[in-house]
Image 1 (spheres, rainbow, N blue to C red):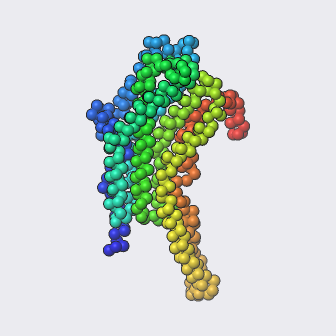
Image 2: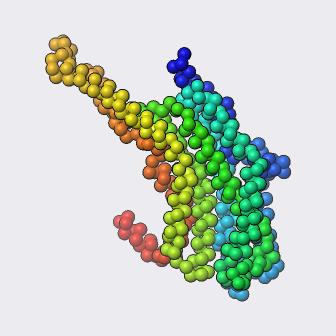
Length: 403
């Protein structure tokens, strides 16, 4: 009976198929009550339009009223502010779209732990408890209030007046004695547009924290990993798709960086190379955020690989010894033909099995997964390389590589 209790039934776990990382929380409930979302994050176009009206349109209206939307009198008029447009017209809508995409892709991903038979029946309550804890944290009011307080206390009270301006007269104000003196548009930007954007961004990091905490809870379970699994990850290979699940979030952050750097390049004359260390640190941080939580499975994968190599090594030694005695030491009956014998195919299959175990990875992702994360993050910055290399020269180099 004790052995049977460790065999997974593949029956859906309570809440495993219905768990969502993004459907829930105070802001989501507010969207539902105001008609900005359905039960499954439908009505995306309404949310996009609402945030467009809330964050970007007032900035344009105030800038037009103050005569700061366009013209030679300002170094940085509103319609030429690449960073602000990248934030509010590209990055923010992409973060909203990412919620819908993550909702569609994350549900089956969580269910894979059960449907793939990785959770033994005896540990099903522990798995359900991890799901319940993640759901409770997602729905909690306190974290979102804390994020909102952080945005206004740290962002509006300190970062906005001291760090936003970069020394030139702009549509949102001018820096005097290292402090920003805002225009009407600047006040709206600092008190509404930027806090809304920062809150949505921090809310995504909070969700990633919930996901990491859930994975840590699952890693406490003695998973039924199979060293012979063809994904070379003991059956956890499905977790490598996280790079695609969170790609829109990564791309949105890349757009944020691209806009920030573009303003410095075009209006301050700074070179792209100046931001080399910042970009490297940013990419390392993103890799640690997305793939770092998967390292919690390293001990179990390592143990599974060692066990597989040992057990299949013993099996291989026994089989090859008997194969040698039978076919090389005269043990086979005279009437049994060597040609077409299933013993040869079995020997080859055993060798392939041992190779699969030997190639088993100790983390549930590979170099391609890490590359996908890096590309999704840095792709928005790629066009800025044209500020260092003329387009004609770049095309010439590409043609030389191709031909």
